[in-house]
Image (cartoon, rainbow, N blue to C red; front, side, top):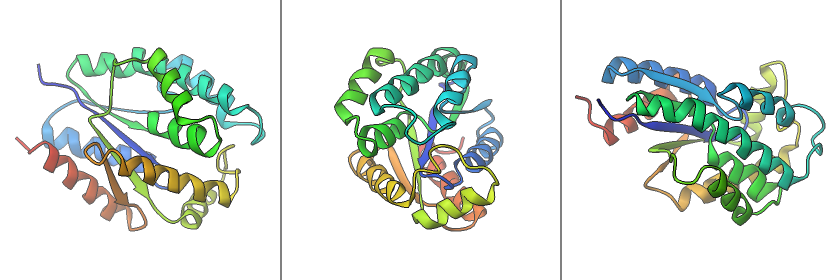
Length: 211
């Protein structure tokens, strides 16, 4: 059985992660002849989807940052145990719209819970069960991302946190990426959907040559 792989897409609001996750999955399935699971965080399993409703809706100050970390990590444990690990064990590839880097950037850095706290809780809950093989950070100017998010017609709790919050968030993601350059590939997401999709496919084929 071929080895399954976990690819995660990270970035600020309106970066196009959901669209690119679907496009990348379709390209990988056709190019590598593998089954691909597209999933998301918070969510991706029944219990995790229930927790998602708690964290993406409501007032921007609904949760203490530490409590919010606990909720996200609880959702991730369900996601990993019930969706990601079973798929990888079957040799399927998994593409997740957000994963652990989002918790580190949003709650750990910008909301002030602290990276050490996030990492300690994550280690207790997930341990070494799974780690992304490749992460794409879709990066674009904050104003452009928020404008794209607004066009969708609905805004979630995080999208309402203001431009200054999202500027700090962008900086946090870029700092995280700079410390894990082997795993995290920063991709300019300000171009067309097709351009971004080509960049993602090119990096995947570079990492894992097409059979």
